[in-house]
Length: 127
Image (cartoon, rainbow, N blue to C red; front, side, top):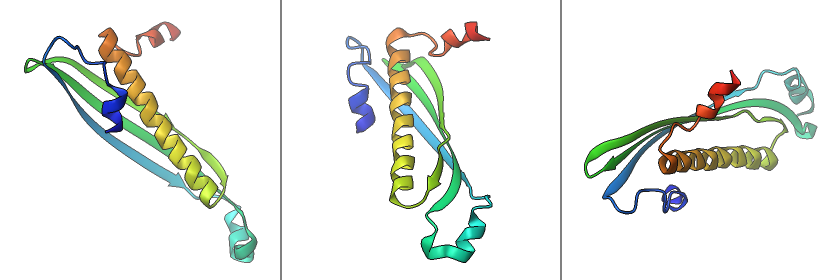
């Protein structure tokens, strides 16, 4: 529902168009740290447990107008939060990173649909 709201007005208005979106995400966490030695000794008093999180979100979108494929878009977004404290703060930061990934993907998708050009072509000149 949130995707539909963010894409409102992006599809061509004068044609019978529909957008098909497939999204897949991965989350990997790494707990390896010398800080965990302290967890064994000071479990109730240990507020620091570093964790590296790698999140990726993949999206495939297909724009069909009058039953024909008009545009196919593939996007990827990543976030790599490196958080130190555990508990509600970490959970809210992880959720904020995930929400930001979705927002960035939807803005890039909206831009690609409206401009009908590859989204990341500006990057070609950077390399």
